[in-house]
Image (cartoon, rainbow, N blue to C red; front, top):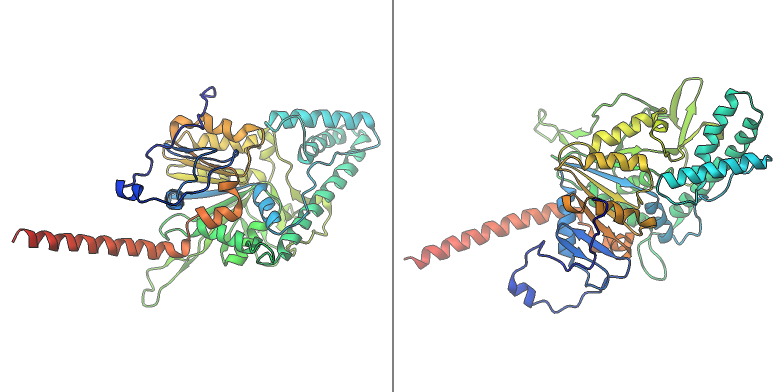
Length: 450
């Protein structure tokens, strides 16, 4: 199906039915979509130049997605970028720096292999620092095996690159954390309100549903920061308080509470999410003596002072054998177990489909007919998002919100995402109105036949 062309100019079909009276009463002209904006919800396709959809159309669809039996959210670097923009920060992650040693031939070989790695992953012929690190670290291991002195050159170069990457990511955290809650000029929300609204909209699920499971490829800790601001409790694989230790045992740990007068009827506690960081984190450390992964307490926006060689941030892989390294095998098993099951939904935000080892698991998920994927993306680097949607266009399992009109974090949280705090009241109101209307109709009907 890769040859199937998605027709973005197709007019909207009747995905959501509206009465003739409500359609004719519409007088407000909505803004038109920009050239990069696309919306695909089932048979509803809206593209550049057409009017934006009504909020209720998008909100109702996402509300249905949020109440899926198993809901998962995969976050990429786009979320951190969006929060950085909201913070008006000029800091960016150091993702383009090249590795340099005193051996020019070795440098050229590493760069050539990094280009191959980037191309194989579908990111084009311009590698980033993760591609270079992945190649350099693999080469370093091989050179160590044969006692080649060039291994020391690579060790020093990768150490410098990792240090620069760690410090640049920490600088972004610091800028986001220091930003005011509201811009003094345009009155737009700052990063704190944006991340809390974003998380609460997806975490606000019916208590009988499975917990929202957060996955991220990012090394930063904006999700942990946002969850703390939102009052969400996080469940992950770490056990302990002072220096939590990563555990391979996968137990369905959860939070419950006992209502007054019902000691034998514990209920799910609201505001609990699961978190899996697929590529490691700034505060994860490998302790070789104990053979353990430890989360070292580090303030948000601060770089860890531990040995850079023990820092567990994972250069993205182009080959699946790399994901078998501990603890990444456990993390990727959690990802596949969470999404590759019936009635599972995966929402992606800020993930550009540039990691082939993750895309393979998503494709496996879509072989299950009851699963669904909602892609929310600001841009489409290399056309990867469009190509992926084209491949699954006829299955009806993939929905898309593409472009600034939908994926800008301010617009997403303000205009499109459901408001969880009012969802329970809305359901109750709908039920009451429905019962009232039925009662009135019955009474009216009875009076007519007398």
